[in-house]
Length: 258
Length: 138
Image 1 (cartoon, rainbow over the protein chains, first blue to last red):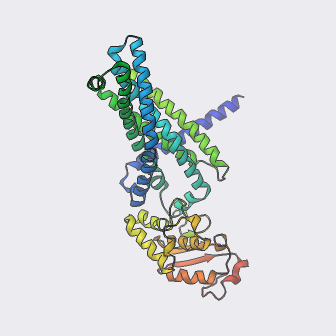
Image 2 (cartoon, rainbow over the protein chains, first blue to last red):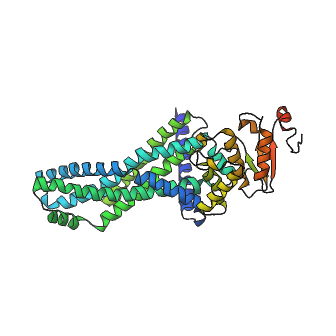
């Protein structure tokens, strides 16, 4: 039994070291000018389009629905518990610091990370990755960096958009439930928002964006050379990705509480 | 080359990228290695395809092309590399049959810009290449 536990621990540690090595390699490549060429830039543009632009109609609809419902719940609970004075801070902390980046990361994971994981695993099974290596095309700069940058750009920008739409649609509830006019609602939010909130939103957007692409890429890259390995690779990748998202969420809460 | 120090391989292990069309597959090499602008590299790719009357497949993806057309695109892509030698490994794995191989070799000669092209095949397929105007080395 001890032998099995030890073996499993060593395996986990070894794969963790591998992930960290891959993380460092990708990060270094991202800042190397030689990684950027016309082919890579084309992939980057396509990826940003598929990840951030293609999702917009669904994303805007969901942010309006969530904005009205969740801000409504926050306002009615705050009123119920006599926290009217802190409504602005509560809404900002909940929407900007927590909900917008977390929900965006979940949506991008479900829509784009699964696609990236499947794409990389299929490319591996079809020998396309082998071909790129044979033709001296760097996998990191041609395939991985554009996807990671697109993840960072998409999750960060969509988080900001989500927060703005959510706060704006929250006014619908504030108007009908509390009879609040637009000017008062605007002042309530503007007085509550701080630089710290913007920093948290940006920081989480970048961290979530990085993992929503890096983990599926790594998982796809480690798929076995068989078509049946593709769904297994996606399944493993998604489990690891959700664990990583929760770790980032917890780490950010711990950092904010310091 | 790290994996192929002697030259560029064309084989079943070097397929075209499924998420790119034919001209993009060809242009990719020069975009990466020479940082050539996309439009210029793609124009050059279409020009090469037109040399063998395949200009129409430039914007098609792999699933819309025949095996022979895909084979030509793989050869053109290899010709775009800086390496002076190209190795075509067992063409039968890439083509449906070798009955048309002499015509294919003629077209390769039209495309070739003074690079050494070698076809590596099994002895059992030897007779397909007789009379094709290429040197057969056993």
